[in-house]
Image (cartoon, rainbow over all chains, first blue to last red; front, side, top):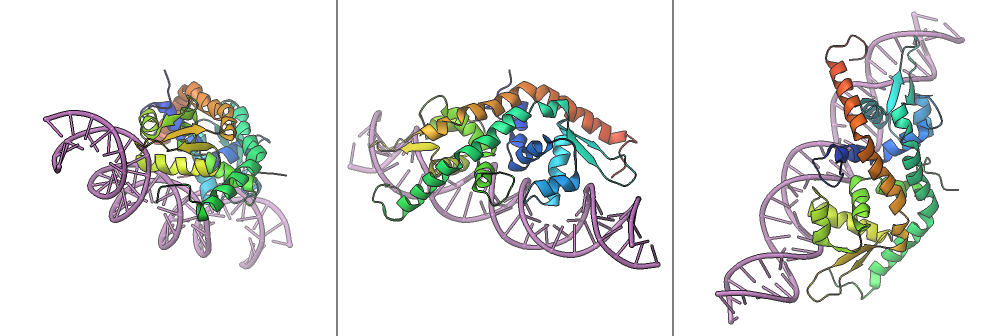
Amino acid sequence: MANVYSAACPSRQALDRLADKWSVLLIGALEAGPQRFGQLRDRIDGVSEKMLAQTLRSLERDGLVNRQGDRPDRTVVYQLTPLGETLRAPVAAIREWAEQYINDIEQAREQADSRQSEDPGRVRE
Amino acid sequence: MANVYSAACPSRQALDRLADKWSVLLIGALEAGPQRFGQLRDRIDGVSEKMLAQTLRSLERDGLVNRQGDRPDRTVVYQLTPLGETLRAPVAAIREWAEQYINDIEQAREQADSRQSEDPGRVRE
DNA sequence: TGATGGAACTAACCATTGGTGAGCGCTGAT
DNA sequence: ATCAGCGCTCACCAATGGTTAGTTCCATCA
């Protein structure tokens, strides 16, 4: 049975590639429907064209995204495949978690950082 | 409002760091309860001690994991904080997706790879 | 009373990945 | 004929990740 905790299991490789920010953002962006390269680039703030192309290729290879570039004017449209659609819920859950709990994280981070300056607590160092 | 699609938004940084394989695997592993460094290392096949320590530090900093190292024999116990617990569901969803759909992915991948060898279809090259 | 070994790291090093900026082939509009 | 826009690709460099080898502290055992 598939088990991501064994390095050799194929599901682990799947996780490895899925668990990166550009894949998560891209799949989320494609939930809004088929889109062109430039639209995706504009929607996903901060993505380089290189990473966008690269991530699209790998998602395409894994059957999560479909690429259609038949049009004579060279425009290309990407969309989620049925398999890709099954990722909507889990990916949205991650995204929503990040948006919902960001405040708690920032707070914890500030505490941790200030504690580090002059706290006699932690032994290590 | 928080929006992961804008690069400047703090929630985006949260996503960046959450969306990596070791974080996902670590949080999943910690769902089984408090554990020691060595236990985690053994449970997560393929993780190096460096990455384990590094990921634990960053999760600790973000308030998702708690570290207790008071014991005199130097053993240390890690566990999810209440904030970390809120990640159980979304992280489990990703993990289960990978395990559930890995067959479809592998199949798509093989098709894509074989197509690449001698298919007159795709123009680019 | 060393000697051994385990636990939890840290350091140094190198390979791979990611980001940046420029450029390229094609097309349709001016 | 030129030019802008689209969808990339290339070359380069910095940052990240992986590998191996330590190191420190403690506990146990001969």
